[in-house]
Image 1 (tube, rainbow, N blue to C red):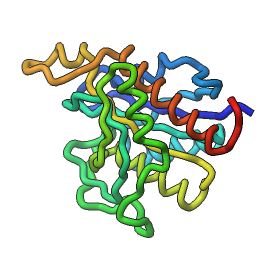
Image 2: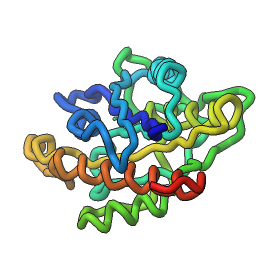
Image 3: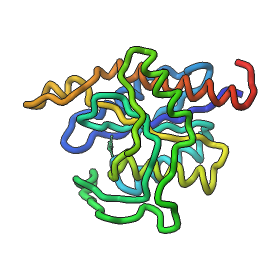
Length: 213
Ligand code: PCA
């Protein structure tokens, strides 16, 4: 059975016309390293984004789930290692909700680590000649909300699943529209980075399962 990978991007938010995370996810191939790639978009909504993800996991039963979000201003693709149990919005989500100082899960730990091979994923991106870093904060906005929920479910409900999060820079078209242009990467390059990261995660899963490719 082919490994099933669920990969999500987000809708645009914060006044942007596009979200490079979704644009890149959308153009990924349907197969990477022999794994099936299921792509979906999540809404930029506290709570609801995670609910949509839970439905997708329940339907598609992926072995690997990777969510991808825009981190405007970052200069590299960031493979996130940690999600924290905190909602603290610097700007409202797409429904105008801006929670402050709230836990995500009353019965959850302060933080979770991703159980994906994050270092190998970052190295695989760099091997493509694309800047990549390991990141120790996914923020306290909707991306962290979704990542925390994902790791909470892996802990409580779906222990066979691996999950994590990747933040990506602005697309060059977004940077070009700003008076003091922040760092950016073209969407096709971001897609290549995601493909490399997914490939590394799939290879590691197979190696662990002892399955020959
Ligand atoms: N980035 C936001 C939420 C949606 C997205 O693409 C974040 O970093 O929280």
